[in-house]
Length: 286
Image (tube, rainbow, N blue to C red; front, side, top):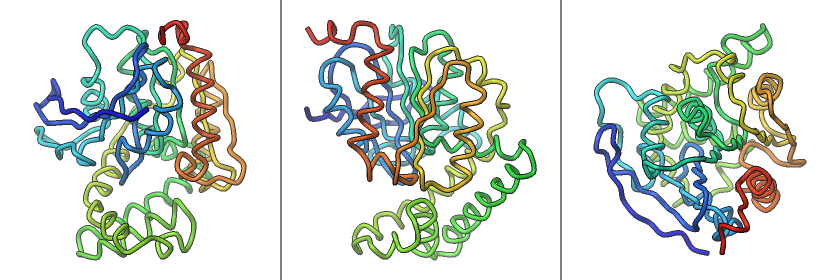
């Protein structure tokens, strides 16, 4: 099943947000990673068919969505509210799925939804601020991510967009990943370095303590790659220990970009989680 593209205006600031959607039934909001777009979820949406209403917005500044045009700096709460505004106003139960930066957006959106949240799926969410408040080892991971962000920021400010994005891609996908990309793909990614730098600023400015997420009662699935960077795996462990109704599963042989490199396995886990916790998804297809 293909995904249709449409444009809507957010309630928050009137910015135009590009949304890919398909299917019918309960709403599933799908949030992509940094330097990506809602197209990341085309395969999953096809797998869900007409049993769920898949909604995959481009995060602010990505794809066809406009850059942040509000007053003051963009925050994770504002990003989450902007994405939630893509839902119909009368939406009852909502499922959230998020990867990396989109996972952090999904976590914040889960707090905003409260009792309306039906399920949550997180694929290595980049809630890096939680590491900053952790034990000495976790704080060490915070500095590791901070060094990565500094390299991205330097690339954005100095004009070395390719160098900054090479560091970003190689960190998440492994040494040499940048050089393995086609020239046109590297050029496209380099054009996004400013938005990736903003993502880090947004993630680092978040202040919600981990105890806030202990209030999420909806069922949560966390997916991590066995070869993912240590800070991401530690965050998954921290959240698994905190969320009251949570399962942590590992994708063997995968790294941080498992929704792309191991799409069939990742999408099957998400589908099963949604079917288990949706309200009669089979009936929604009738």
